[in-house]
Image 1 (tube, rainbow, N blue to C red):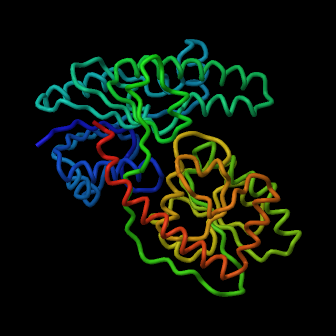
Image 2 (cartoon, one colour; image 1 turned 45 degrees about the vertical axis):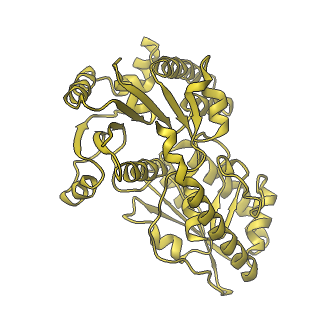
Length: 388
C-alpha cells in the first residue's frame, strides 16, 4: 500500500471553514487506498477524544504539533524592522521544523510528502522525498489586492513589503516542489515560474457533503438571507460589508422583506460592533454546525469580490440546492454556472435578490443547483490523481 506523509497547518476540526473542509475530504479520499502519516500543525486547543477518533479513520499515524500564531503590534514592527514575512515572524520556531523532519525520517518508507497550504511550508526543510504543495490561495496576490484598496500611505508601504517577502517565500518553496496544485486558473497563471510543468489545477474539489435534504419553502413571509464565511478572513468581511453598505439600502428602499443571517468564526471586536449598529442582521459566531442555517434559509448570498483560491462554500451551497445570488468573482474555479446571473454591481445584486421573492424562480434555481452538484461529483472522481 502506498504511504504518504501529509502535513497540514490548520486544526482539522470542527469543519467550520472552506480550507478545513477541503483538507478533511482530501484525507478521507486518500485514506481509502493509501496509508496516511498525518502531521497536524495545530494553533488551537487540544483535540477531544471524539475528534481524535474521527481523525483516526483518516490516518495510520497522527502527530499533532502545537504552535503559537501570535498577532501583535510588536510582531508587525519586528517584521518591518527585520524585513521578514509577517507569518514567519509570528510563528518563528525552528524546533518545529526539526520535529517535523524527525517524524518524516521515522516514516522513511513513505516516498511522498503533501504540504497542505502555504503556511505549512514555513517549517519546510530540504529532503529527498517527492514534495507536493496544495496552494489553497495565492497569498501574495491577496496582500497586493488589499494594498491597492488602501488609502493609508503607511499601510500601503507595509503591505508592499509583505507582498514582496511572501513572493520570495513562495518562489523559494516552489523550487523544492515536484508538483504544485492550484485551485483555479488565475492562481495557476500568477504562480507558475520558469518550470510550468510542475503546476496543475485541481479542476474539481474532492468534497463530499453529508446533511439533511434542503427544501425550497413556499411562503410570503420574511425571506431569510444567509451569508457564511470565516470572519477573520479579509475578503469575506470586505464582501459582506460591501453588501451591507451598498445592497441593503436598495433592498430597504424597495421595501424588500428580508432578514440577514451572518454565520462565521472569529470576528474582530470591530466587526461585531459594526454589525450591532445595523438592523435586520443577526450575527452567529463560532457555531458548532452550519447545517441548520442552510436548512432554514431561503437565499444564500456570496458577495465576494476579492481573494484567491476557490470559494468552497459555493460547492457546499450547491450540495444543498439553496438558491444563490453571487458575484462573478465568486464563481472562479467553477465552470458552466450560467444558470446563476452575475451580480457584480449593487443594483444587479439587489435586483437578482429581489427577483427571488418568486417561489418558482427559487424552485428552478434549487433544481439547477442540485443537477450541477451531481455532475460535479461525477467529474471529480479522476481529480485525486492530480496529487501524484
